[in-house]
Length: 283
Ligand SMILES: Nc1ncnc2c1ncn2[C@@H]1O[C@H](COP(=O)(O)OP(=O)(O)OP(=O)(O)O)[C@@H](O)[C@H]1O
Ligand SMILES: [Mg+2]
Image 1: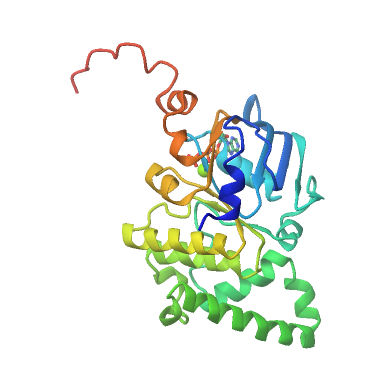
Image 2 (image 1 turned 90 degrees about the horizontal axis):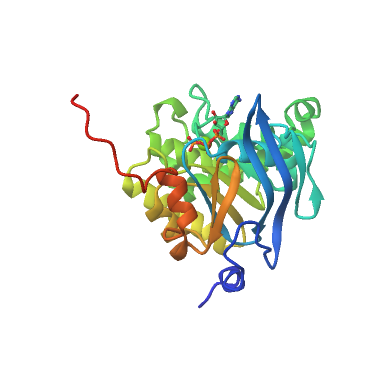
């Protein structure tokens, strides 16, 4: 069976800024500079609803900065973008999350001294910005607490973390922490997940199961955008690939074609890869 989002992407032009048949996110002229450096400078970008888009690019390309801006964790220097039809410019991160776009971080934000379960419950209230409000309205909070507890149990079972429910997050392995990070993001039942290097530092077996989780979330209708450096993982998991270099989208296309794209090769090897290499220096 051919997945619908994949099938519709097959007619999309493999070029930077390409229009998608059903974009859930569309960005225009989004720029973020730090001093004189344009960390992000994206003319136009659309992400297809219900698809897995991989965001690739060399270190310092601006991937994390773009995630920060799109999800309201950083303010752009210029630009506009919309998510599911709502303009997001100037919107705080917790309001973006409430609309259904939720991100994870390159370095996990799990709180070491809280248990796995407490981390999940906190994520639900934090992402939604309900902490203060909920603590003032206790009866409402009680009802929500039960709902969050049920969802947390469901996610712990899904990610096979149930036996670690009462363990302090600080005692988990790197891979288990990445799973917890994904579970934390899912506590708000998002429509779109933005995952910044979800597989980094995860052992191959756990990385494989993370990839399978991401694919099944897509199959359940979720939109996913993930940053990843490992091209094998990009190939096996994504429906579409966007390559960023020096802040701009320099290539887009289906995963099988992107590795051979000259602009992508240039970005990874540097502009001077065709020059003869200098003689080896004695070390
Ligand atoms: N807060 C900041 N202040 C100044 N410069 C920053 C800041 N955040 C990022 N940068 C710079 O912006 C550029 C893009 O950084 P960013 O972290 O977005 O890259 P990245 O693509 O996520 O890289 P990596 O693959 O290493 O995670 C880099 O040159 C970085 O040094
Ligand atoms: Mg990064």
